Amino acid sequence: MRRLRAAVIVFFVLGAAGVEAQTPEQVERLATLGRVWGFLKYYHPGVAGGTIHWDSVLVDAVPKVKAARTSAELSATLQSLLTAAGPVQPCRDSSVANPETEGRCRTVFPDSVRINLDLRWLTDSRTLDADIRRQLAHVRDGRHRGSGRYVSFRLTAVFDADTAFSSPEYPAEGQRLLALFRFWNAARYYFPYMYVNGGDWNAVLPEFIPRLIAAKDAAEYHLTILELTTRLRDTHVGAGSAQIARTLGNRVPVFETRSLDGSVVVWRFTAAAPADGGGLRVGDVITHLDGEAVAQRRRDLAKYVAAGNPAALERKLVEMIMRGRADSTTYTVERDGKSLTLRVAMTPVPTSPVTRPTYAVTELAKVLPNSTLGYINMGDLNPGQVDSAYAIVKNTTGLVMDVRNYPRGTMYQFAALFNPDSRPFAKFTGVDSTYPGQVVWLQPVNAGFMSGTAQPYRGRIAILVDERTQSHAEFSVMALRTAPENKVIGSQTAGADGNITRFSLPGRITTLFTGLGVYYPDGRETQRVGIVPDIAIRPTLKGFRAGRDEVLERAIEYLNSGR
Image 1: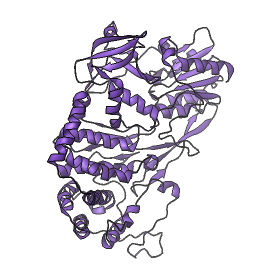
Image 2 (image 1 turned 135 degrees about the vertical axis):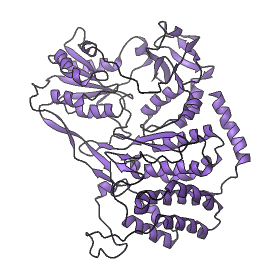
Image 3 (image 1 turned 120 degrees about the vertical axis):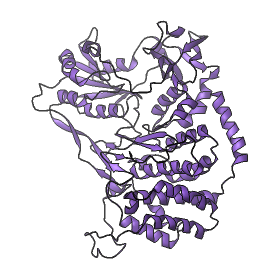
Image 4 (image 1 turned 90 degrees about the vertical axis):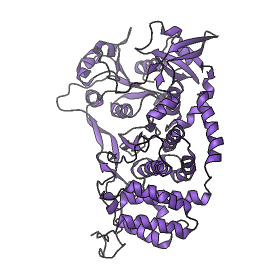
């Protein structure tokens, strides 16, 4: 990590000397180019048809816009994009009085589906002259509808064919700006939560244009793209590449860590750990890695972590802090008031999906000792094991459903066992394939009673959550909450619910963001908010070192007392 900081310092020294600084006017003109190019990419029927290599059009336009010294020269380049895209037939929308009149197609949509749409820049006279504004409005009204060359649609937008300029790892300047404009526009039009991302998405372009122009090598370029993705403030967001792995570390510890009371703590060992844990113990507080303070790593790496709320940020940041590039790492830990230094082997990050093991049902479902309360670990239970697990706990007076993990698609089965009726628990917004940037509301989703279900569970249900409860796990909690008598107990979840959208950027970078909006039936949001516990409690370092699960203890208290 010291080498990473040194590289950044060298970048600023050499970058300033080797790259001509962009004036604010040049940056704004390039930002205008990026907005117009992306708008035409998704709105223009000619571009969507796939006969034009639209990425090359952008790359060719970059030096012209950089060289522009007047608004007229900028307009000439923008006009060349419109000319390359080709003519657009006038809109013939039957919903208007005179469908033959060009530019009068104004389909009216409910505010609820326009919430994510922002095309105000189309009327900005500071950067667009009157003729360009008129032509862009004509494209908007005669827009392409449905799948096209650069995007198709399932539940989310799909960008499988948008892969031009995948190599080299360090692309030329125009291709580096293409990466920015590709990501910015894909998110602008197909990230359903743009309206709650908590920042000014328009400000992202002028911030990153000069930085990507100045990026002096592959490492600087890839890290800048990684930082760019965090501006969506979406816990699902990430950027991955071989270069990022080499720079930030492609090896991980043989143990898992958690943040407790602000400290990074050894939580549990993985299967790759030596029998003695390399001398480390569960409960050790890690203060330094290879002589560098954890606090310093936090400051260096926080800007590369995308998260929708503080709980998710802390979880993901701790994971990044622990990555390394060497075969082993020297850890300085605090244990029993003493400082110890131990060198422990690291293990490579898996290069392919890890097969999740199957455990015996009796390891995942049980009656808690000295009680009449049941417990089920949803993270490791397979759908085929649900009936057997329920048989173990169905006669208990209260039940703990532990979702401090990532379940395996069992939520509907459990909800059917808990509910006497089928009840709505969520509704979605999908991207609108007919109007980029707009969303469409889908029908609510129900969970609960199904024909043939046995007598539903009658006891209280405690649902355990924390920052590890993300996406499908959060969706599972929403379904379980339909049980007649339940409480969610724990701490703020990751706030990233909904299917993901993946796409590629120049330099062999893969990125993703949430592509499907998830809401409660009454319209309350889950994005960034997460699942709000009914009873808030977090584990403490003192409790963990004493071998206690304080969240589980609080759940037991609720199941026994109703409070």
